Length: 71
Image (cartoon, rainbow, N blue to C red; front, side, top):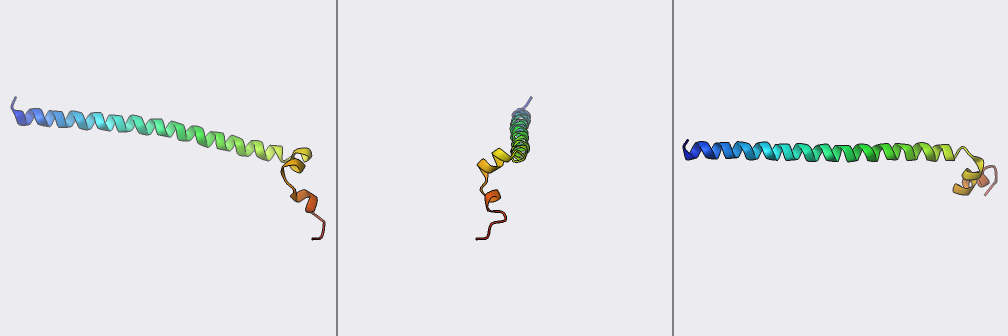
């Protein structure tokens, strides 16, 4: 084997390893983003369910007390 051939092999290996590294990193980031989105959706659903309970709604918001009252 000549030097040029060895350098080309080394470049291919580094490209493959860097693309593998990038793929692993993007998979990891994707999993984290999926978990964040799921947690946010759960938080939205729970908050909307909590607002259906009158005692919780009165504690969280003050708008219900002002409805029907003139300023």
